[in-house]
Length: 71
Image (cartoon, rainbow, N blue to C red):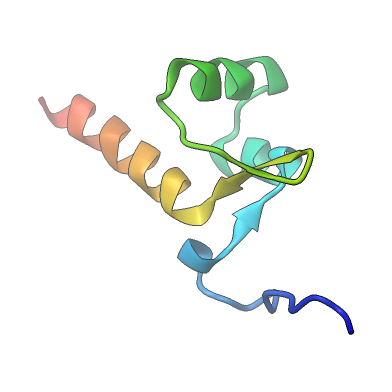
């Protein structure tokens, strides 16, 4: 029995992104991504021994940046 997978065309908020994918989506370096996660600015979850970034966390972080830019 295999584990269910999220289809590649699933809405972004339903996906868990690998760090490399999150780096590409946010256009940041690996060091910056880890700094964002360590500071709590970008939420992450653990799946076994692998760290993943929920799509909602990426959307929330972008919204936070947009709010800062308009404030």
